[in-house]
Length: 143
Length: 435
Image (cartoon, each protein chain N blue to C red):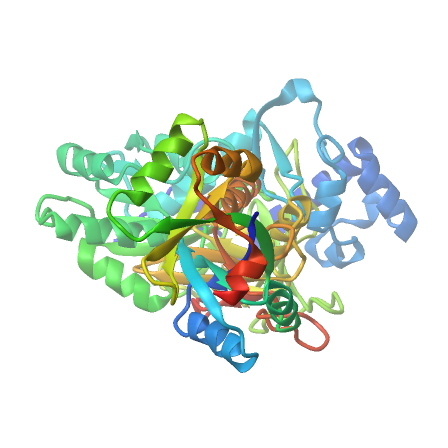
């Protein structure tokens, strides 16, 4: 129950991110979520898209360095306390987060949290025991 | 009033200098032929015997020596004296990471320090002066050379070494330093720092001896004005002895080569042909008084012009221009020799592609060096911390190889220009070489 996050290396220079998004636009790629980890001279752009395979192919063709990482996309009610509940469960279960970011879709009163952890299976199991769903790549494409 | 350390030598007649050179050259060639297998083999191959070398005019019969030869002979291959007579080693970086080591007997140290003493005297130094040395000490020849020269003159010597600007300025003010010895870029930095603190009226400097890197006339005037001093250039290389191979006098129109110790030639770097005075070419040195590590016709790779024109300072020794460039790809960054091949070696060892670019610049009179490397799938991770850690590992490896901080910039693949034919690996934006 994971989604395929695409991570792309981008130099920290004016216009580079615009170049990347223009390229994705030209290939009609629809993004669900985006987050950037930045350092002084480069950034890592992480995106969740409708078609991960196609995206990684077109990025490769354009000469970008990119990788695919399976991450958890956790579905939760869009209300105060939801995130706390999830993080508390994971923390108590000894799961360490590398990074995370949130996104919303057309689906009303529902939010999604992308979690990058070392052990996806263990994290998903802890959450599912408490009735919290993680969505799969196909489901993300349809959102 | 011009000051000299050894006026009878520094102002000797040209005939006298030639006589010294001939006699000392013959003696040195005999010495290396007898003591060093490397020279004996080379000379035998060319059919030259020590007896064939009697005067400076015979010098051209001898083969050239290159930095590669020194590297191949590491560490003892060119030693011309028993180790038991050697008392010091100094060292400089080689072309592929292997260092070049130079040996000194006590006699060699004395003559090197005398050369530095001449430079300090030419800058007005006497036993009344306080000589502030902030060249690095240790294997680098800058600190030990000027330190020794200052002792010979009898000046009060402050062995500050490099760095810790706060302490440099405090000692300069408290102890009344009068002669500053360091790289020109550090002198400019010190000048700025002194003005920032409003301490310009508390320093007593009158002269500076600045070398180990290229600097412009504009930079000289700037330092002179800010510190209220006269700034003198000094030249040298570890292989030949260290700083003091040549030095500037009050005329500031070139550096007098200490010809009683070193014979200078300028050659066409492509053909090896010896060029006349006034023509630009590669500087070649023969050390004629050293015991432990005399080098015969050593190619410095520095491009310059020699001049025997009469100098108003009274010295009769030949003058060389500042180096006008290099006949190889060596860079001098913060006074440190850097070869692109050293950087390439580190990149390959760390698993990076050989496609890179080195950008050298100067900001606020301080050199910067950046290596641009293309990102590869192997180095990449979705975790920025992991990529940064790899980048830091590369910075550390470069520092270990070169001894200076090199900024690493990871760039998108295929963004470094691939030129047709010879790749443009180095972009030097400093424009340091004039003329």
